Picture 1 (cartoon, rainbow, N blue to C red):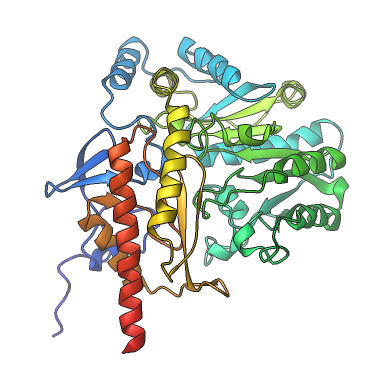
Picture 2: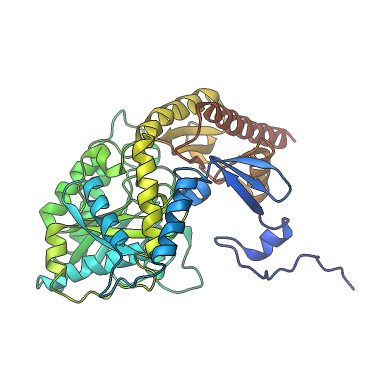
Length: 452
């Protein structure tokens, strides 16, 4: 009889975004046992600089006693309060704080447990807004390519269909359309031109017109797509999109679950372009990974119309008191330690140093980023910009090289780095050296393979 693998293919605990059998064959998950600052330790005692911020969430760093104390005190005082006809004072305090941080009049806050549930809630709010105003035909949502909007059915439906997230599950939600993202490096209209022509905004308008402006409820978009490739738009893009939505009476929904609370060197990525969306979705970094919490912030005209309706958006753990306490503690740290300004300063250095360290590498097409989020795009040919054809094995080797150097990154194409906002200057140097060294090692392995 053939031998069987000692690792069962169907695990006791399922892992997210993984082919369970492949993960089992490759040795299983990285077992993390403790963390402090920007570092995590595994069960073998190995230490890593966490340039994934957990999963984009750990902004203020691991092991913050003040956050733990705030959560502990809140659990002792009040461990649960259903956000139905009751509320905890800490939830009200957080809502007020978010209203002062957000741009414009985004001052009405719906708290939910996770970013994915916030996306689902925002979609319902956008459609119901028009229905409540008597415009009952507006149900179509325009999303964009390279988008990532979470793991609920609504979030998967809004995410880039080329990622195949609904394969084998079924069709996406009815009424969702897609338009191009402002991906300058790969723009089919102006990628080879000396300047952006804003054809991507024109394509978004075409999508609205094709769907019928009187049938479109909202445009959903990440101001800077993070998991989709850290795609930083040209400065004229968002003002043009805001004007476009206003012209057609379409709500603009900004998903800042990844980019909110300092990641890009501003409190919100929207602030880089003076953008005031009609709904703003936040999560992840709001609680620094210490608790689960997200929110949908609404402009007053949206909130006032919806306030007259019964809106089906509730979840058992919405606005959990301990999560709200964690959020307030993390927001205080971001402000008191000037982490937004720190992300801007260290982000410029990270981008400049990565670009310099990888200059001339034949495998690197572009290094781009904003704040403490950067991407290294890998290509087979720098002239044609053809994406690098990377096998599962080559990506695994790249990941192993990085881990051997004590660094965790998002390893795919592009390679993405997004460390906590508390990362030190010395660790930026270490991060750049590890990423550049590992990418150059991959390029050298490919060169040797091609030569036979």
